[in-house]
Length: 357
Image 1: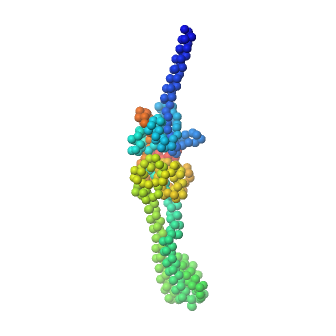
Image 2 (image 1 turned 90 degrees about the vertical axis):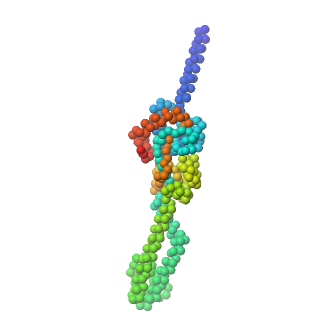
Image 3 (image 1 turned 90 degrees about the horizontal axis):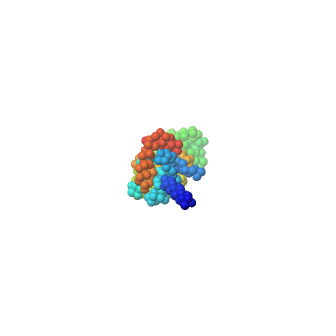
């Protein structure tokens, strides 16, 4: 009988231990993440980032344990919807499509849709070079050279007898006349050659005024071309994006906005791939989140070649997401308290993220 009682107690203790472990396992949340610098990053197999710092504070307040599971964006969205993960802490944009499938916390960061494009300095230089070697520019250059040659030949014909030292005979003399015509048009006026006959000087005055007008017109044409090109590449609305070659990450909140407005875009797997495409002139603009683009450009050392232009017409709200609405309610209460504290601003600054009220 005593042996039976001892065996019974051992079984009861084993059952209690199993039950305690089961309870502990239930309390361990499965947290989904997607690499999205600077909010979620991986360094030496350790996850870091602003979103993770925020979640750590929330989990500590909830007194709950958790494990991190990494997904690609499409798989993460499916895992949230199916309940495979208890909550996703990557910065997910709240969209009308997603909110029908699962719930979101209050936004913890508000950013803008932005696009990465070549810097103005780089674009102006490329435009200038392309204009110089364009068919239109060469067509306007040929008449200019013809006029220079005509005035140079006229001066040579008028000066060759009385001013033979400066405007000699034959081809050499004609070349000297054209040289005088060119430097006079450019307002350089070296002074090595100058007409001495009255009619030659009269023609010189006429040519000087004509040359000033022609140079002014040429300068205005080049400046206008640069200005027009900048206006054409400036994107200030979704309609402007339709006229440009655009890239984006498929399945992202930014791509959903582009799909909503029926804007065609090329698919890129990562922000870095999109920025390389912009830098190599494969696309005119890469559309994504302002904060993420700024961090990527800075960390890739592309600041001098690529600029980030935030838009004012599309805000993006970053939130945690889950299909467990009871958990979302608990997280929400603590999340609002955390982001109202001063240490949240310090966390953002640590990852070079602009703090926004």
